Image (tube, rainbow, N blue to C red):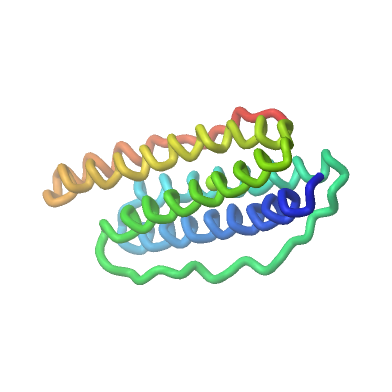
Length: 169
Ligand code: MG
């Protein structure tokens, strides 16, 4: 595997684990605020991010490339109100999209078609992640300002169940 592509994928393992850590902290925030549905949503989101990390980890190993695991940074965000994590999540997903695009560009440059095919799933996944994050903000704007609306929204988010990623490497 091309050294630059390999390094970017190895780095992405860390970035996905950081995403898991960030979303776990959002879950932690909402749990303390008494919004157990929002807490559930982000706890599942954290599981998905860990899955993303494991997919990249497995992909490198499948290609005979040794993985280097680095320290995961402390989640960096400033607590504000119940809207803050939702806005931070959208910003973060836009950032992750730029990272995936960066790996894709590096793979494209060296005609690494196998990596590009794996990344196709992640490109699509990022489209969904950004839409979900954006929809959460819209719903919060529409319904979150009223206690009954917030209760309903929290109840809806409580129903989210974990399902493993559909990508097979
Ligand atoms: Mg991810």
